[in-house]
Image (tube, rainbow, N blue to C red; front, side, top):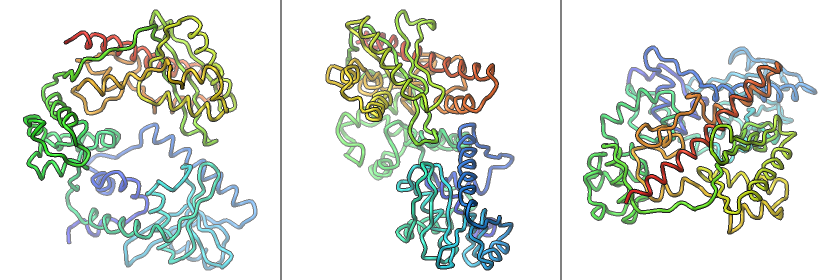
Length: 481
């Protein structure tokens, strides 16, 4: 048995990291020397809102029930023996298995037994493996057949029953292996997960030194080990392949996908941009469009607090927008968006409304459904066959291979050898915007509120300025034969 075996217990709180990455889970339990993984501002916002939700649930339960706060596993047992209705911040421990648990609540059932309950901001636990594992472990620690309860962020209560037992068994088995290891587990690189991980700077050099093939955009763990079985085990190895010689493997089938993967490896190693085919951008008067929305809105509905546009002549002063302070004004913001579109349509018979990725189209559809406005003439036009909406990500993904690990707007625009557009606030981003907006909503000082709003507007203005610069760069790339 390794020296780590006695160091730490299996904790339900590890379930979130476990769903993301075994290596991250190991580092959470055995942090690198001198490093403390502090939550970033967005994570802290979620933590704060989660605690507020927990307190709201506690207040609701306290209205007609006796409530006591547990101070230890022994105290928790005493409170259970005393038949307290609600035990807050319960502490559970199984010495035989080494599993500890801290459910938000233990609720006394009419049978006299207790069932665990947690307050979660999630709107559903159906696709949340970490929630299922946590409540499943609490049930196991209690030895109860009663379902665990999840007080969801939308006010609903969801039950967690015996159907999660196989998942809980899997968690316990894998966590035991992770915690017994003296070394962090070997894992694949995943750009979307890794770049958001607090241990990114520690792990990334190892991936690069190993020449890990999943560093390449379009190659992930689902296809990597199949490629390795065929003798293609590194970025350099992939870059030297003839695409026609690469056998079909899961998630990498067909000549075009394989050709793109080879070019992607070459681009990553050399910095070269590859143009796979000629392409044309639609002609007309382009107006650039981007939205900022709050997924943490307490009502459970996504609130678009900013619909932003950049119109000709594309200077910073040509930025226009529809803004709302609160969800209560949501319809006003949507109507303001439609009014701006109507104005642009009347001014330009050849209007192109350019955006990056499908997020804006999805948002328009959600709002049309929310306010039952699919029959509105502007909405019909936006979502119809002759739509002026144009997704700028499509010509990029279809025709270009860039020296990037992700094809987000900022990945392309900030790269010094590509678009080379820099946001005025280099720390800004979509999560940054959400944090600023939530601070704006909480701030009472008028001057500070105005400063926060202006910062968000500045970020959104830079987003649409960036898509304009991307348009110009794409036109220059299109001129290259």
